[in-house]
Length: 146
Image (cartoon, rainbow, N blue to C red):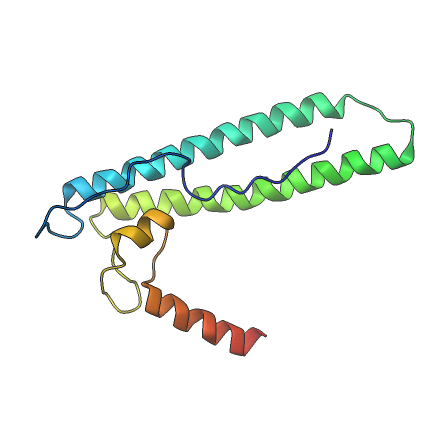
């Protein structure tokens, strides 16, 4: 059975937040909105981990006689494990972000202190930099690292 890599960006379903005119940035309703997004995302990732464990257990019982089939199976396992490792790192970032929400320290750029913005946070709830600082960081990285 071929394994396909599934990218887990943000949760599959959420209703975009529509702030009221003059609403304070990162008020309790907004923080709750992002906490819900992050908890849903975490739950989806954990369900994916459970599916992977079941799949690996089921597929590991197949002992292929053909070396090519066995190599294909092992490559599939390797791909799934790399994907789960990335998701494990993402789960850590989600936990850190939920901690920031709980500490009332969410939604502001760690570099310059400006508002990151609701739409950017909905696209990337674990973002810690505003668009300008992120762009600058990527340019610096590109210049230094190639």
